[in-house]
Length: 357
Image (cartoon, rainbow, N blue to C red):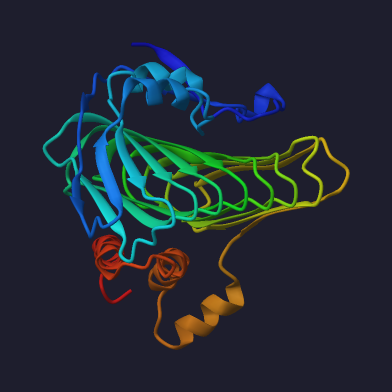
């Protein structure tokens, strides 16, 4: 095990910014873990992935990058396959409770055959006062006219370290929606890499986070738009308080030939402490003329007039900060079509801010 570089930018910037990639120590030796699976499985087959399919997965780009492949080489993938033209009515929920598991690793492959529709929720959680290491890699493969909604919720204890790696591939008119809520762990490395390769394929991502105390959050989102008239929208929002540190890389790469493609990314960061550190790099790479690309990052603090207004009505500064932090998370949690998962997020926020905040 050694130090490696993960979450790489697709095009390098100045080294002194320390944002081209993230240093990561692989000292932990994780053990493969399979999740608890709940929800209806009509039209879904679940099995351990075959070796031949594992070789095919090597060609799918993921957010953390190839340097961490060795970490997952012994994590035999759990294959979740949805029958062609099948609409799965209820979300399939995969829960990893790592409270008593000091170091675990897992891989999931979600494949929706032509015309299929499915929602998969992956919850990673532990007791509050626990620590360890957890690594997971998820592949989403949406075939022609298929749609996958992948939801990831991270509610780990304060002393955990997590690597959450995602790779997406979309065929013609296929769509993947990625909803992510990251609240726990001392160190988190996360993101998604998507290749929307087919005509009118799409990728939409909504991410919310809270980073507080001494938490460190490193995010890398990359979309390769290769398909004609493909569509991408990435939105990230969150709050930083205390001595928290966050790095966000958001990249859209317009591949030559993707005529008529549209790509947009938005980031909102609320700083609640003068000692919190934020680094953001929204990036657009353009190899095609006939496209529409937009990007931007908004970084701000609580408005003094708003604070005065709230204080005059008996709402103190800490309560106001908690209210704003919760609102950002809950706006993304509202996109999750599964009340028990939303309730877990609310309970976690109650533990951090109190149920009255």
